[in-house]
Structures are given as C-alpha cells and as structure tokens.
Image (cartoon, rainbow, N blue to C red; front, top):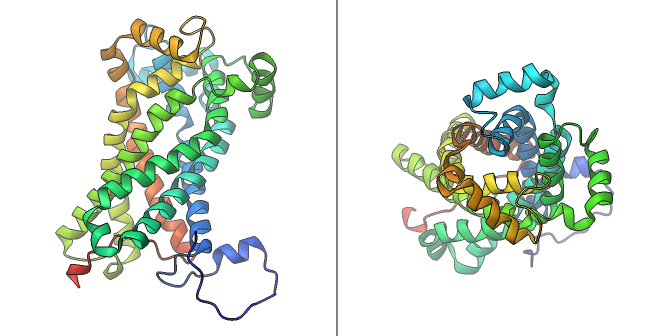
Length: 331
C-alpha cells in the first residue's frame, strides 16, 4: 500500500523512535516515515489546541445543555461558572480532551495526508489538481471516521464530566464509572452524532482551508516552496480561521445534539436514535443551529487556525516537506 522507499542498502542500527521522527525526510519522498511524522504533528496540534480551549468548551457545553440558566453569552457564562464553582471548573474534562484529541489528531491529519497523497499517485498530478476538492472531501471523511472510533469514548467522558462536575475525579475515574454504569455501549451512545458532527466539520475544514490557502498563494503569484516558512505559517493561520468558521457553522447542530445526548437522562429512554429525535424535537431546529454558535465560532476559528499553524511548524521541525497539490500546467 505504501510506496517502496528507494533505498538499496540495509542499515541494521536500531535508533530511538524520537531520533527517527526528527530525522529529515527527503523532499517529496512520501513514505511510511512521512506519514508517521504527519500523524505525530496532527496529534500534537489537536491536543494542544483543544486542551488550551478547554475553558471555552466548558462554557459552550453548559450553554448547549442548559440555555435557560446560561443565557448571558460567552463572557457571562464564564462569570457564572466561576462564581458558582470556582475557576478550576473551567478545566473540567481537560484530561479527556487532551488525550482524546491527540488520538483523533493522529488519525485525522495522518489519514488525510495518506489518503490525498495516494489519490494523487493513483490519478496523476493533472487529474488530481482538477479534482483536489473531491480528494480533500473524501480523504477527510474517511480519516475522520477512523479517528472518531477512538475519540468517542473520551468525548463521552468529557461531556459527562462537564455536565455533572461531581461525576468523576479525572479521566480514569470517569472511564471506570461509565463502564460500570452503562457498559461499553455507554461510551458510544454519541457515536452517531459525533460522526454527524465531525465528518462534515472535517470535510469543510480541510476543503475550505485548502481552497483558501490556494487562493492566497495564487493572489501572491507564488508557490509555497518559493516563500519563507514565516509567510507559509501566516497563510496557514489565515486560511485556518476561514476554514474554522465555515466548519463551525456547518457542524453546529450536530455538536449541540452530541452535547445533549451525553447528558444523563436526555431524550428519555430507548435507543440512541429515538433519544436524538426527542432531543431535536424538544430543542427545535433554530435553536439547534444557533444556541452557542458564537462561542463555537470563536473557539473553532481559533482552534483551526492554531491546528494548521502548529501542524506546519511541527512538520518543519521534524524535517518533513509538507505535501501540496501541484498544477503541472503552471511549470
């Protein structure tokens, strides 16, 4: 499945994993080591950004779960949480968030790099350039589906901890309590909503970011290889903000459903599907699309820009030359 590296001698020296990861990757040599570096960079960028924005996510989740109580906007929500529970309440779910999104970022960013490069190798540069948006969309969808299998249990624990601060003392305790009370199925009660949220979100994130970055480079009349690392970082951050806001709007209804379905007793008894239908009816379409949207746009816009910026920075630090679609007719 991976392209065979063009190496004709075998080095039997055993190197530490860290040393292997930071070893420079030959330019345009997209082998197994390149994908490992992409996965590591993805894990780091998602863990750092989601972890740093845990306080915003706590307030956003509270607004979604109880909009009647938390009805004073983002800043007002911060004040309410701190006044009632103390400032440390804003770090609720940090362990599950940082751990879950490292795993998710590993498979998501690493998977997108893998699938889009394999698509280019299969189609050829010219056809891939003409179909880069469908390639982004398909690569992101498949990578996100795989990533969500690993993310869902950690996200379930995080949401339960945020909705009920007395539920657990840390990630391990939360896992143990959920497993004992609900079994393995409890960790995946939100799997449908998380797919419904994350797959459109990730498809929009990568496709819009790619299109925005290409438009910026086109307006400058330069290819990424012709610009400094600082300029490329600026392009990543700018295109990331645009992509983040678009992705947040698209995925917000499912994000609200996910927050509510993981709250104990929400939607009544029955299957996850029937509970989701009940929650949607109780909440209403307009509220599903708008309640908590502003803090989510702030959070996701900042988060997405940070992810692409950190991803590019880590890839450069690991000596990997990041893949970009190339128009062969421009040569």
